[in-house]
Image 1 (cartoon, rainbow, N blue to C red):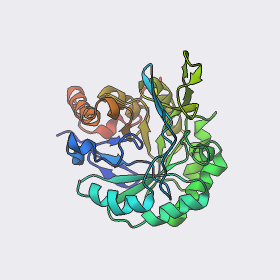
Image 2 (cartoon, helix red, strand yellow; image 1 turned 90 degrees about the horizontal axis):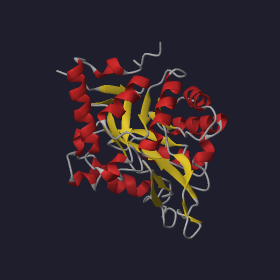
Image 3 (tube, rainbow, N blue to C red; image 1 turned 60 degrees about the vertical axis):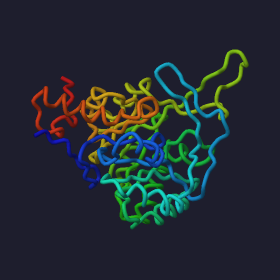
Image 4 (tube, helix red, strand yellow; image 1 turned 60 degrees about the horizontal axis):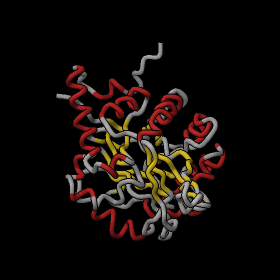
Length: 304
């Protein structure tokens, strides 16, 4: 019997494959394709204090081996998520991790407070790394002290496990990681999207309404694996690795680099079954390699 179960920040998951926030909505659309209980965990759409319409279109552009987006955290607001989305998702036997984002420390704290104790919520992923909003988001994630302040604020307001989602758009990712660990983060998610830009050569205008956006998909995977490996050597808290995972082999790379779990993001868009294929692929690979416990892979990359 192969053991795929892991524990991240006190959240026990039956397998290490999650869905990355911003790519899975609140699971309703994907529930038409498969039983969501098969997933390790679900990280739902980024949630803010008030409803947001997001940025005007166009908000998506395909690039070679990647997807550029500037959705801008479109969501119904935390109260609607608590009232309508969490109860619906709770019918499934899968931990729900709510991704939250704010314009200010006070907003982060208020959202965390409202979600604390809500039945079905297993943890909070703190988005201090979104490049697609004009205020907040990325600004908090590029300076260690500000990142730490956000984590301390939500820790004061919530007893839930706190997962800090970090931005790759920094000079030294380990400095941000160490700062959020010192502030009390229970785990780290990385990476969020890389800042990018696409130009329509006929109109000579940016493709996206926001001019720049976040690049995800297979194009960013080597950057993400490198950052997971760097951060795993710098902190003691677990890491959820993400960035271009579309196959079991991709996921195994992240585990070897030091991630305790992984999340499928852009891959959900062109193959809704991608997370399940990753789960089954990992299991088959472990059987082939005669490895009984997936935890043997975590951080097992051989450097020398």
